[in-house]
Length: 280
Image (cartoon, rainbow, N blue to C red; front, side, top):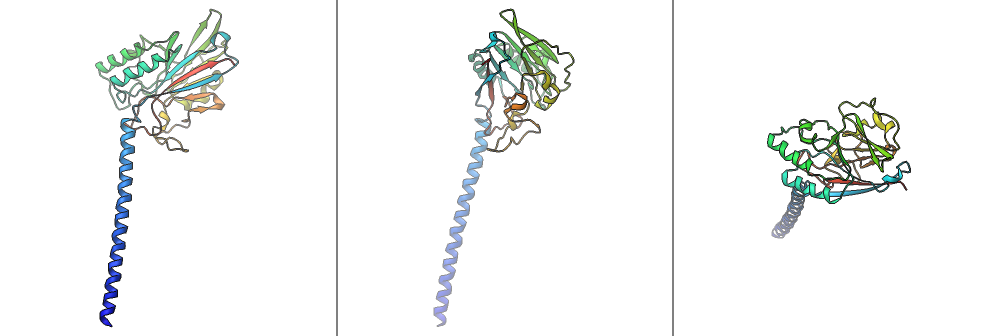
């Protein structure tokens, strides 16, 4: 009788041991899958997501637009955050922009990362890049929140709008106005009346309430779309109040930008925005 009980007990122990071993194998397998997935996502976000450029095309319709500007193409890019986009990346970006054959190019600020000091060679590389961009009308730029060496890099290639406006005439009579604001010191007092259609440029979209009364269309940057986007949730790495692609109440579009602060991009690739303006 005793021997039988011992055999049963031994058998139960063996069954328990097998169960524990199977459970351990399942846990190890699940853990391995999770770790491999995390590693794969991290690699993708660093080496593909942070570098692979996309072009976002947007059709904008407004009957205030003068007839002769119907079909106008504007390319916006923002937040290079050099050196997250290096010299080779900049050459690719140049080709992408020029292939779009824009009428107007706008850069909405933040040339470099906040923790990076540009060298003379960096300034030369960046100046060459901005000079190489081609448009049929004009190229405009506004200061970002941390733009040192801005004039050194851009003053010979872009029209810099520091709380200023520029009137663009088409067929000598009709015109639209490009207005650029300095996000660090927004001032609308120098903006005149008299344009049919005002396009505003600003780096930080959180300033929209300071400029909304003079803008028919606003193009902003700064947020990088949060760099890491979770589906059906906001971007994770931004402190901006306004961070989505579009805000209908202000007719404001926010660029996801080119560079990165943390060497990662997930579900949020670097992008160029192509806006096609239409009267109807």
